[in-house]
Amino acid sequence: MHTGEATRGFWQDYTWRRRTRPWIIVTLAALAVSHGVWFGVLHFGHSAHIDLIRQIEVHEAFQDGYVFPRWIRDFYLGRGSPIFNFYAPFVYLLGEVLCLVGFSPLLAVKGVYIACVVFAAWGMFALGREVWQNETAGIVSSILYVLAPYLLVDLYVRSALAELSCFAWLAFALYFLLKTTRTRDTLDALRGACMVALLCLSHNITSMIGLPIILGFVLVVARGAELRKTLGAVALGLALSAFFWLPALLEKGYLNAEANLTAGEYNYTQHFVTVARLFDTRWGFGSTMNKTPGAEIMSTQIGLVHGVLFVVACAWLWRRRKDGGRPYRSALALAIAVAVGLLFTNRASQVFWDHLPLLPFVQFPFRFLTIVALGTSALAGGVVARLKETSGAKAGTLGALVIVGAAAAAYGPYVQARYLLHLAEPPYDVRVATREEAKAWRERPEFVEAQALLTPRVLREGRESKTTAKDDYLPHWVKVKPIRYFENRMDVLDGQATVVAVESPQPNFRFAVEATQPSTFLVHTFYFPGWQVHAGAERVSAVPNAVTGEIQFSLPAGHHEVDVRFQDTGARLAAKMISLGACVLMIMTVGLFQYRRVRRVGVSSNGRHGPRKSVDDKPRGIV
Image (cartoon, rainbow, N blue to C red):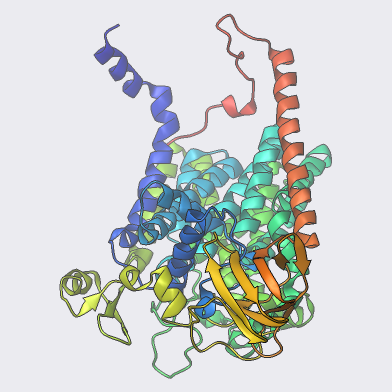
């Protein structure tokens, strides 16, 4: 066969087209929804600058060989912060992959935003198809998911990159765990474990919300051996990510986190969503913290199309209440998840907020709309599946087109972005622009783009760059925050000595010290457990300064080569060992599974494994 004929045969192959067409459809839908991010100017969002700053700092750390940067040394005028000891870092590590292949930090952040929407579309398509065993249902669920108002809020209003990524990991986790209950495939369970780990490594708060939902879903759907396998997968996912979340939990007492994260405007009592707001279709770019009458406010709606389809799905569940099959149990678990999500957005749930440990750290009850969007979108596909079952394939396809069209009409106006530019003169005030305005302004000399201002040097020396909107990760030893940057990274506090800084990679410091008498020194970096001071081979006792919270230590007279190193504490080492053990267990399990598969199936004459028999080989409906 000629090459041209082979190529035509590949593209014309029905099986290939059948399998790839739905993925292409949902990918195009996700790209259309995220089109506002494509423009090369930082798009507006409540956390837009913060995400860009974090990506810049992670890239700087990577360039110094600091691969998992628990400590970022440029924040707080060079005093540093243990931000990634507490704030889940995965999305910025994903962005660093793009930086390593040549993207700027700004384009890397934009690439991760787009990837998160695409991954969410894929995850929901897989979940919807698995629940309803129907590809048309999966496509409808996927498109409604990426058009869900709260996902659009995270994308275009809040610019909550880490939270946005969890739309994907939640959907994929439920998909793989649900598939495990059908196939009892160990590899599916391991994939589910990986998705649980990614959830924990992407956003602390969404993992706190999502893990109970995942566990509840498994308990409702799985039975017997399936239940043990899926619960084991969730436990393995927690173990895989323990290197991050366990130290964060054990060491949060070293911060002023509770006071900063749960008080004042961040207290949950200020942000409950009324029933009327759940159905209020007005769209705005303001914050829920802005209580000024008439001010533009962020939408907290569930979406009218999602709401109507949820009611229809619940009516079907009521009629089929005597059905104990897996699709019914899956749909019931999703409906319960939606009900729980709606409850926790409302003031009726305040008793739980008041008494459940850690729940106040969620801050904003509207964050439970992530679960509502997940459940309502997955259930929406069931309406199409039911229609195809009762009225035929054409009716189901027509229903899918009507639902998607209604969603596009209802939510299409929300798919819009605003953009941020700065004035070119101090204090570099921010201006918000439409796409057309941004195109014109970026050509004018009086405006400058964010990435031109937010360099590591500027972040370190020119402004008090914080880790979040408040001082969430400021060590509690700091009584007075710094007001200026010190070019000398270490000064003599008491005594007489000369200090010469020696170049060293992040996050550590090295100094050559010549002390003519016993002296006390102050390193202009915040003290935090893990910092160690070594003079030669000898470890020196280091303490936080009583006022500034910086690292303070003393040395005798003489010449000293001083190393100030950020090391793992006992909690971090133990957590790493747990995650390492989980990785080893997973690799051994995969190896054993493949070995048994080879023994069971045998090897064909061309050296490849024989075909695997699975329920997955059954054809599903297509659009």
